[in-house]
Image (cartoon, rainbow, N blue to C red; front, side, top):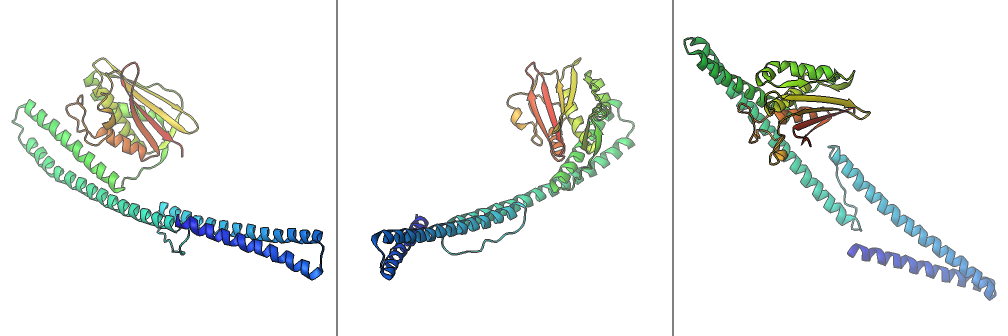
Length: 336
């Protein structure tokens, strides 16, 4: 309100000065040249024109000042968005000074919150890495102990081996998560054939599919390529395959389909199971989340890893239930 009042006073002052200038201009010209009233009227119009020019010039000057202040604020916000430090210099009290103060306070608070979140993330990544390394030592010791005690029953050794495999997977997953959080996991972009990617991911899980008695259907739809890290993208696809396989009954099938348009390549993977439970849907990609129908040997990290790997390569991953039953994962890898 105070700023608007100041602008109103300034505009009123300019208008008053302009009218006075018009009046005295007309009066001066009439007295100097002893003009008749018709010419006085003409001089008055000329004076009003001069006053109008002064008024319009003042309006444009005020607009220029406002635009300049807005541009200063815009440049400041753009610099902060790009991660560069910016400083707002005070320019006196005007209509935009309060807005400038609020913007500066907000940006400062956001920068502090970002720094605190980054510190927490790095701390979390270090903790994950430490836990993974601490797990590795007992795994190695147990493996050596099992190898030395060959007199144990075969069934007992196999059970220990299965638990060791599970712990090893947990260790590898924790290390991978720590690398993702620390920003040290680098993806190499290369030309990847989609059909080859899917086939190799399925081939790596061939024994698991055989034990589960679940089939895989991957059609060959011609040469479709994406630019991504082959190994890591295959890891993400394998995690999706395993999730579908674990929720498909014996004799069922996991299907794949893929297509391409000028913007992105879409890969769909779905099963013939019962689909996702409604209460699980919001949490599917959360780390260490295990739904009620989760497989017994899982640790609830496969889908989270898949999502982070895909999103780290300019892609998206989402899950949905199919109308005719079954769960479906949809990957979109964007070209740029």
